Amino acid sequence: MNLFGKTSELQLEKDASSRYLPVVISSMIFLAALALAGLFSISAAVENWSSEISGNLTVEIQHVGGDAQDRKVEEVVSFLKRTPGVETVRPISVEEAASLLEPFLGRADIIRELPLPRLVEVTISENSPVDLNAMATTLNKAIPEARLNTHRPWLDKMIVLARSVQFLAAAIMLLISIVTVIIVIFAARTGLVMHRDVIEVLHLIGARDTYIARQFQTYFARLSFLGSLPGLAFAIIVMVLLSLLAGRLDATLLSAPTMVLEGWIALAMLPVIVALLTLFTVRWIVLSSLKRMM
Amino acid sequence: MVRFENVGMRYGMGPEVLRDINLHLEAGSFHFLTGPTGAGKSSLLKLLSLSHRPSRGLLTLFGKEASSLSRDELPELRRKIGVVYQEFRLLDHLTTLENVALPLRIAGVEEEQISRHVEELLDWVGLGNQVDARPPTLSGGEKQRVAIARAVINRPQLLIADEPTGSMDAEMGLRLMYLFQELNKIGTTVVVATHDLGLIRRFGYPVMYLKSGTLHHTHAEEYLQQFDRSLY
Ligand SMILES: Nc1ncnc2c1ncn2[C@@H]1O[C@H](COP(=O)(O)OP(=O)(O)OP(=O)(O)O)[C@@H](O)[C@H]1O
Ligand SMILES: [Mg+2]
Image (cartoon, rainbow over all chains, first blue to last red; front, side, top):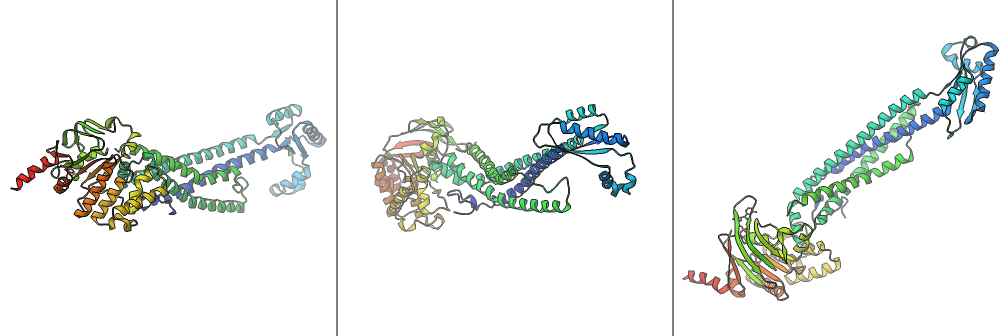
């Protein structure tokens, strides 16, 4: 058995015209793998942001000054503790806020005198169906000086951005599939023309169209499958390098593209999918061309 | 078995090379087909072997009208027909053995049975020591015998041979004619296209001859008489 699959009667493996196919498929798979990785790591990132951001909230309390200020903080804390779904409530003391701001504003003792809002850190327990908007309204009604900061508008914008990047990746995938199909069609057509005589003899000896189509489809499917492996391997290497780089940069938003399991499964399926796509394309093209022969 | 009614044939948009062909081949009959070069013998055999469609008329094979055949029925019918092509049409990259085995493989016969049958037949046609040779390395007569072996390997009901003995010596030619005769005895309908008056004289089967695109039927002696006369 030849590595690229011997076809018993048609000797397709001798065609110079089909040799370029694995190279083209390889490049296609490389691009497809990157697009797919982008698709999955972005959706993983979006999920991360959503859960992190909706899990960590801050409540801002307007500056009212003096003891009233501390009372307001206590009111907010007890309100939040009564709210179902809230896991931890931690008021940030004036000292802590001042030391947090010190690098930006200068001396902490002066900052303490500024009319800064007070902050309360809130975490929501995971998987609890808390309606943040409702919670924000009730909080605001109970204590008009307190405002729940849900980070929602910012998140929404990021999600829109992420979705459009995902849409782009999906469009790239579609384009790659179409180009692959077209290339495969050309390769199969060339094969049909080059082997016209042999095909005619096979027909005359009593071969069915499916018998001939089978030789074409298994040969080309194998070419596609084997061609896709180096492309996939190369794409994985590039992805690992990219995520190492991203880890170095310590970028907080696009943290190292962590792909979910589904992403890896989808990547592993790529060679199989391209082989199947090739198989059915070739079968269809060969059968429809043979129909026009006697 | 085979019936032509007012059949005409043309290549593409060219002129008709065959006109008003009427013929009826009984099952188990043996016919010679002759006529000058370019008369259309090979063309007529193309119609018979279902490799070309008539441009008009009715062609019935094994009780089925050729133009009404569906694409699925065609292979089944072709498997009942063995053809020796004038230009052999062997697959150059396959060995002698593989070439001859091809009709059986296509028909899905078991490998073990295939090799036994094929080797036996190749021995019989004197190619027992050439089973692994490929057609480009064979002589014309050897290729012709491979083509004949391929045509008869799956015991066709209709055997069509276009100049099957043209490339070999008289002795081997006779041997192959005897093979056809044997197959004919067990019921195969045989049509042999030939220029060889010696063969026609020796075997004496009914003769069909093509002249200016139409087919005439006659007996061997009658056909040969015109040549005998013209010799004097
Ligand atoms: N593929 C083809 N395309 C066009 N014309 C053809 C084709 N094959 C044969 N012809 C023409 O059909 C006519 C009959 O040819 P054919 O081969 O049937 O003759 P033949 O009797 O077999 O001759 P020969 O004894 O030399 O084998 C010829 O005039 C030839 O030019
Ligand atoms: Mg001829």
